View 1: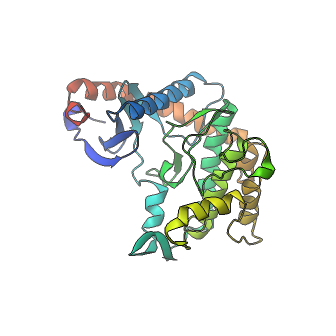
View 2: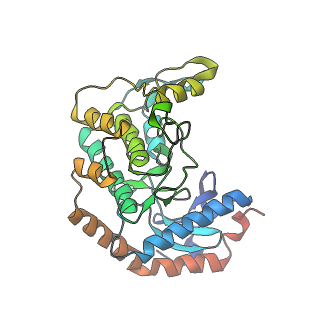
View 3: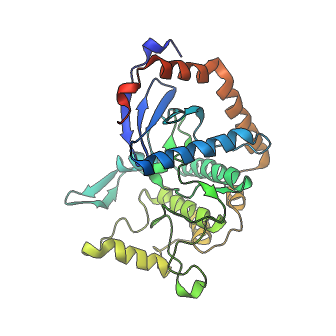
Length: 308
């Protein structure tokens, strides 16, 4: 990384809680939006990063790296290849009159890559679980791909403690509980191994097919309501007898008592957790990245980008 005058912020995306700019090939900055709800979510994500930094005995792999956080600004490792949603969309043909419907997937993800990405995502969620936390909003847009084509779980603004309310879940990465499931019927349940593995099961399904569950079907203007009802009644898309679909079925039907158990299905183990976390800590200390981020902030080049 060079001097601060070598940085030219480049717009990447505007999300629900902030706007992301690329500063160079290593660092991006998320700047909180001005409305109070977005600022609260941004502050919540920063609080999660502080918890991660403070628990060195149980470090978490596969999560987006945070270099520096100050009120309103979070400096993160750049995921140069964008989100998994973008990656998949570039390999699909969609109905030009209804972009929510996939007509064809013309480039499938290799099985080895799909397994690697699942192992990395499950490892990230398992690490949060080991700290008593839940990501709470796992979906394609919150999975990023870095320069080495590794899957990174990002956007921790909805993360919270296991057992807390889920505030940002929707189909096909969550489902309303039905009357037969007792307490919590009509809600998406409480943050738990089930809610996390359910979302990861939908990711697994998607990686095998190149589109999310039921994305090749449309049910008219009430599509979202129909989809919600189908998931609540466990009317999932047909599955095969492949190992991956067997895992997906277990995820959708509460077959895993912990995220770590799912992680182990894809070859995750404690040794990998330790090795990846060591790289995480080492990278945060290399080349004074955090100090350069602070110099960038002090230089004032980001001030015009902050919402008033």
